Length: 420
Image (cartoon, rainbow, N blue to C red; front, top):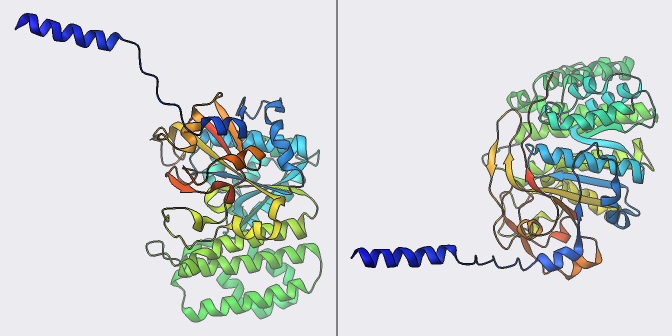
């Protein structure tokens, strides 16, 4: 028996010490190598952009680049996005940064930065703190600071209808001043607005008649401001329309049983705000929009199996309908590591499974890689494919119909709190 056990052990040892069987190659690796290129660095301080230049042909004629993220807890991807912002600014003349934060607050913060106010102070007063409070977001704040006072600025604005940051609390007084004597006819509307600015969710508890009156008066106030035909009054009119829509959203949204006609209101208004900014506030300028990929993509209904809220129409879908090829949506994705917001903590990100877009990109050279879905070689790829650009959930889609590019980062870390 002892001899038999020894023979079995020796055979097992021989097998264990034999040559390792290499894993089967990823079937997409070859075609992806032709349609993508390695990105040398995700460090925002790295200003040698030679590694990003293969993207340049696809940016010809593009006025809007949407930079999407899979969650709001992707610290490494914040850094990668910031390096792309710097590249777009330095090499292609993009000089407006529109954040997924309040239209009113971010525009006023941008005004203050141009006038000489510290960028970090103004970001804290306007941008959602999931970004503003993140250490990995601070290099972007430094880019805004570099243009403070008007020296080749990257100008800050926002496109969300939500009333974000402390700056939003100034809106009722600014509107009352802009209306002048006409404000006396809108006292009840201004009082409702003050409550909404203080606590947007409070709008749910208002009587239906008050909500309806707020909607009617919002239209009347916007009309008064539009009639002035000057830039600041026109901006405030857009803010009023946007605020009424987000008020409707908060009054009717049921996140447990979402109704598309309600849940789509926010994305539709974000699209309207972004297009208004491009056409009215910053005509002829090149704009970068920072957002979640769930808002930035288009044709969401082509994802299979259907994901939650299949009737949702993202902001990017509306904007693409107007801009077409003048818009480029770049989704940032991670391979493995940890992700999580600076407030809620981090969790382990599982390695992408075999047969997915990310696993094939992982098999290629480089710690990061950019897949340009507009490159001619991308047309040769077999679509649909499984990927996880939305919340790291694997899903199948013909991705070139939803996105224009994917920037893959092999190893990622979470968003962490900044040092005060």
